[in-house]
Length: 201
Image (cartoon, rainbow, N blue to C red; front, side, top):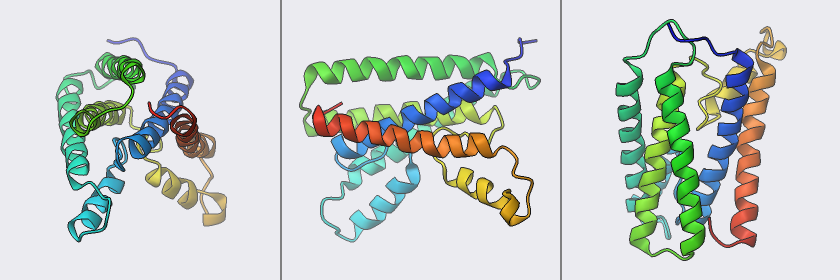
């Protein structure tokens, strides 16, 4: 049986990953021609806008992100489905998350070195990042914390509101829920600063 992970340690790690996802999505949107690589809801909306001719909406980029994200989720799910069911965080999930983090960092270093990207390379990077974040979302799913998917905070906000004392709930897990929302926004803020003042990845 796999050694159990302390709950506090992986919640902290997931919050860090949520911050990173906010940053990745921010850079993706600002530097990869208006596409998200983690927030697929936004891409679905962009595709709808683009199909009716709204200017400057890259339908292809968003389609690539959608397909790549789903492919990443499928691959990760195939891997984690074989994991033991008696642990909160299977080693296969850890392996996927660590690998994805290292690949993202490697891509960032290469991007900084290369600088300006042409359209084909931008689409390839979009697909690669979406693949990694899809795998990340599927790997995190095995933990069973709906509040910390690391790629979106919509359900986190629903749970925070509906379980609050104002709504008649117990107010359970409010700290990590607020933390996830703040971390996502903080990551986006950092991404905006980077792309504005550095001009790229």
